[in-house]
Image 1: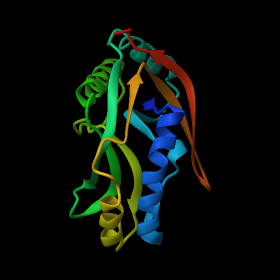
Image 2: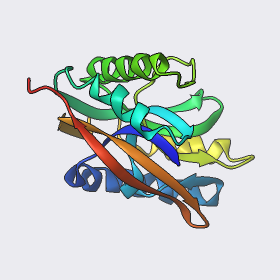
Image 3: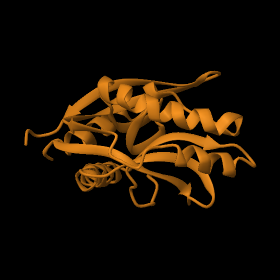
Length: 184
């Protein structure tokens, strides 16, 4: 199974973000492959292909002592940089440190159980899409179309272990299990 941990967005937050994503799509044209708003999530840890479901669940259970928190969505950016945008994203503002704490604690618990994870520092973001070759100019225009202000706020009360199944029309994500954070 192809697995990852994520904070999923409530339906009302996805709907709040939909106009921003559509504005970016309108100016990007075919040079940027933008995803579906229904697929937006904050990835905490990507496990890749694994059959170690029980170990992944045990790691997540160890993190449930961290408190729930409010998260604001609203910054914008690109990897590797705004001048060379390949991956376009909307980031977290208020609550980003709490989200990073969950990701770091989860990564530590996963590594203790032998999972190999990326060594890059955690960057809380919602991946919007990817620039196609020679699409940097349109990608920058798509980013500029996104509002600079806070787009949404929500209470993060849980995170999920998600299975990703790749298909011809993109990935299908299914939450296998959710893990509640401690009440604030």
